[in-house]
Length: 439
Ligand SMILES: Cc1cc2nc3c(=O)[nH]c(=O)nc-3n(C[C@H](O)[C@H](O)[C@H](O)COP(=O)(O)OP(=O)(O)OC[C@H]3O[C@@H](n4cnc5c(N)ncnc54)[C@H](O)[C@@H]3O)c2cc1C
Image (cartoon, rainbow, N blue to C red):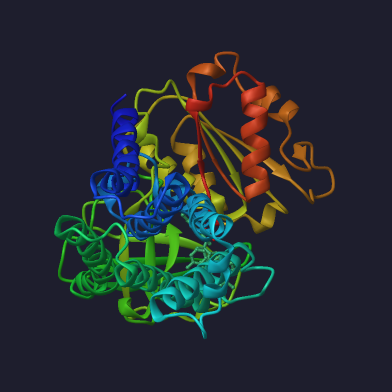
């Protein structure tokens, strides 16, 4: 209930922030020569600009604000709101040109007055920003280059939009309104400084040190980190952190990984990482003693969000088992006696990351593991193929509605399993998923 209230509170804050410029528009003296559709067009511009500003806030990783939803959900919200913001901002020139087609000539930034050129260029940057994000994988833009470009394009688009608005001065004539827009401009600069300067500086002052790098089956590595000269941070089992290895935290070369270890007093952290791309393929070459920077914890994927459950069902695909092992380890450390189940989907039995850890956990707690193998060995009598609804139905107890479900794997698996669970009568509120694919 507390989580729902928190969520409702932050949604209300979002709506209040986005609608503020429209209130300002109502309060400001109406410029002569406008009219209803003119005001609507200006309103689209103001609201779209604030929506763009809020996009910065959404990815600023404010723990308190993101905790009720989980930061992965906030990133998804950010992604979909970007489309809405672009639609609202495009409506601004479209309505203006519909009212007065002569304004079309202002769309050429080389021939238009500077304040109009600023507006057109801002819109152009925004479209590049959205297209390069929506089709990043198809356009083969490397993740890290994309991140830097994303920040530059977003800052440029908002800066030029503010300049456009200030230069035209329409509905911004009164000192109070000007103060409001200057305040919004400074807040955005403040957020960028907070995220890109103060955040990394804080991480630099509380470094971690690599203490172990162990190979795991399935092209994976377990990396152990210990805080150096500080206590580390406490986290809920199942949460994740952004890790920088071999780079300063200012370099924007961090990667999100779930913490696979159980919360421990010394602040030691373990991450199990699958070789999937440029960075993860280098993890095996990291040596003990190297410095690491860890920004966390984040995420709402944790058993500690629903501690009263009758038991937990974990459904893991591939490396999605990492946060689940953290939760299982925490349950084992706490001497938990409830019955739990783990469905573990992978290609082969000898390629299961953290397979040994799971086998150990099976011995010391009431945990039943169902392996689902795509490529089972000869004579395999267990489940095979992909997880299906019938498979879940076969292994879940009759009192399944009282259990809490944690699903983490490839996006199609998460979607399919979520659907099967709902078809089996599990309330949506009891199904928790973690998405490893933010962009
Ligand atoms: C909340 C969360 C928890 C995760 N936990 C784990 C884990 O415990 N173990 C694990 O092996 N993997 C985990 N991942 C995935 C991991 O972050 C990516 O596999 C890794 O960042 C890929 O980096 P790369 O440079 O090797 O791959 P690349 O070649 O750059 O890209 C491979 C794919 O990984 C994704 N990716 C790349 N860099 C990032 C980044 N900085 N942030 C987000 N996605 C990125 C992109 O979608 C990309 O298409 C998690 C991801 C998220 C979002």
